Image 1 (cartoon, one colour):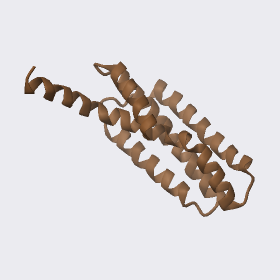
Image 2 (cartoon, helix red, strand yellow; image 1 turned 45 degrees about the vertical axis):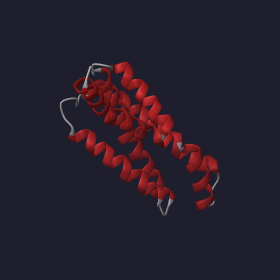
Image 3 (tube, helix red, strand yellow; image 1 turned 30 degrees about the vertical axis):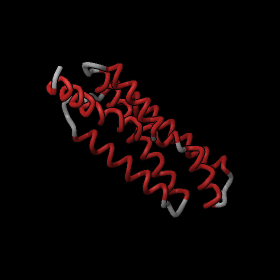
Image 4 (tube, one colour; image 1 turned 135 degrees about the vertical axis):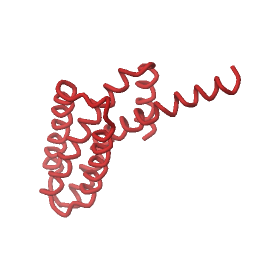
Length: 147
């Protein structure tokens, strides 16, 4: 295969990139959970167990939203819900980083959980529907490790 064969491979890799990077973004909250719990416990001078409760609520929200999205919402033909969820996830994570109070931190973390749960369900549905789901799922794991 000449240039056309290589270009086809590059196009396939580039088309899978949004599905892998977005997956890593959706999992980033739980990956950094031990770091932000300890850091924000010091910032707010509270017991880490209190922030652990906020983190647990976020993870529960991710699970519930993911299950509901997978069962009741199919957005494969639309791009705007995915883009909105990415923007919401980023904004909520940024808000949580600079939250001046525990209340605002809780709202931001739970809102990030809703966005991330939607992202996980939607990205996995899109990946499973692709022509090479095993490559995309492998890429998702690689992207998560890289992040």
